Image (tube, rainbow, N blue to C red; front, side, top):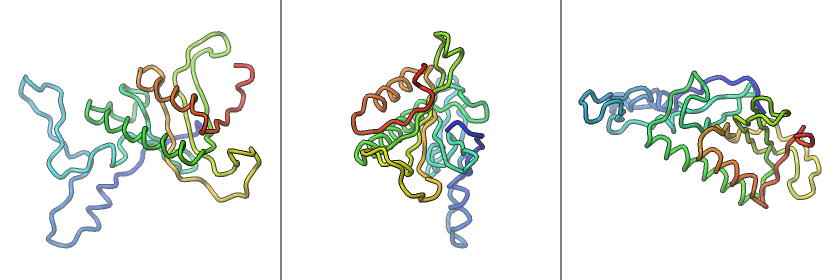
Length: 187
């Protein structure tokens, strides 16, 4: 799962290309206003009518196969991505809840991978990645005919934040989500 990632483009920018001549221009993801007064120092306010940075893909990466992964972190897990504001963090967590609910409802088979520091020597897990797979039947565990690359959004979860840990616990404790983990027998 943890393949080479690259930044995802903005949906808002593509919306602007599709607009009719003379119509109001939708704002791109980076069109935000930084408030300069002391009472809201460091806060970011989105201009009215702007597409949220979460919906525009600001917190997503693409794997080498072009599959989008939502980065679930309240800090800098990936240097190339911004740190979400409190409002954006809530939106990211809501999107995660919707994704995991859909996996639950479908009884999905989900590829799972964990990375960390010195994990074989009682080290610390840093991240978890989850991606629904269409190549395995979640009930019988038999291979399915190839349907091409699955383009469903995966999750790259920071295990250094409490909400990330809770999300991973939710996924791992689900009886309806089939977790496919390789190399875990010795971990």
